Length: 154
Image 1 (cartoon, rainbow, N blue to C red):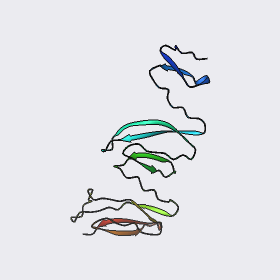
Image 2 (tube, rainbow, N blue to C red):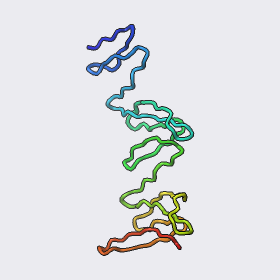
Image 3 (cartoon, rainbow, N blue to C red):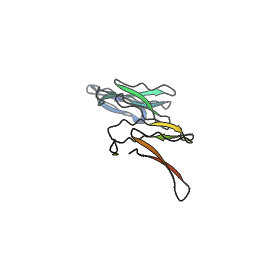
C-alpha cells in the first residue's frame, strides 16, 4: 500500500493506482469506467487557447465548451470544442452527398485566394457550385469516369 507523508503530501488514486503528490496540489480528475475523460478548452477573442479543464462526462452527457469556444462534430460523430473565431467544418453524408469547395478567379483568370470559399454539401447526382468569375467544366476520361471542376470565365 502507498503511504504518503501527511505533513507534505497527499494520496491520489486508489488501490494499485494510488500515488502521492505534494499537499499543495489537487489530485487530478479520475474518471470511472462509465465516464469519459474530456478537456474543456477556453480561448481568447483571437482564438488562442488560454486554458483547459479536465473533467469526466457520464455516457450521453453533452460536452460543454469553455469561453469563446463552439461545439463541433466530426465525421465520426464525436464532439469537440474549437475557437468560435473558426467555423466548424462542414460534414457531408458520404453515402448521399459530396463535399463542394468552390474556387473563385480574378477577372484576369488567376485563382483568387482572397475570395471566401464556403464548403457545402450537394447530392451526389448534382454539380458543385463554382465561385466568382468561374464556370463549370465537366469531363469524362478514357475510362468513362466523370469529373467536374471550375475554370476561369475569361
